[in-house]
Length: 164
Image 1 (tube, rainbow, N blue to C red):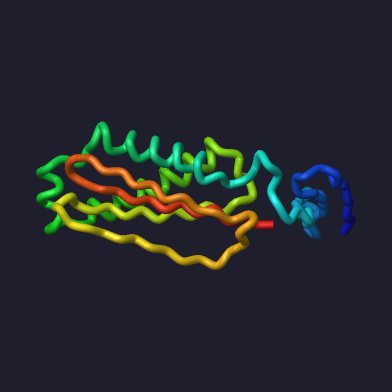
Image 2: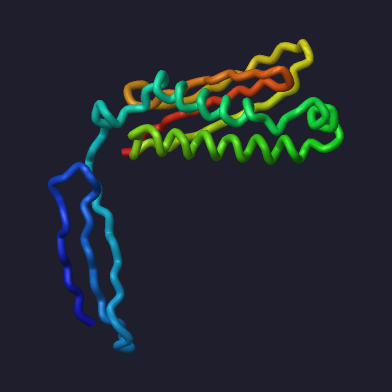
């Protein structure tokens, strides 16, 4: 078995990669493996930080787009008590859309994005949603976005945790 090592890049901020090409014992061809070396980047650059104000705009835009041309109407809300699976699916889809929008529109490549979405019916009630986290205050952050229309209220918490 022969091994060929090729160092692709070790000076950039992106992870260094070593390509290892091995010929198979059966001589069926060459297999290629990517080995990612540590970069020792312990903090994001200024243009890669999780800024709550920027995230707020992206999340609010996503929520308003989902609920303005709403598939949520009064009849659907009335059936909610009997058939809660629709709201569970809506909540999961909405959390995925928010997460995708944050990753696509903002430059936060080394952040783990966590989204928590809560949807409730508007019936003159009060709700408090709280959260508690242990994190690095210099790199990690969150934003809370509230949206409501005539039928529902939506609360979205988006956490950005830097992974070094």
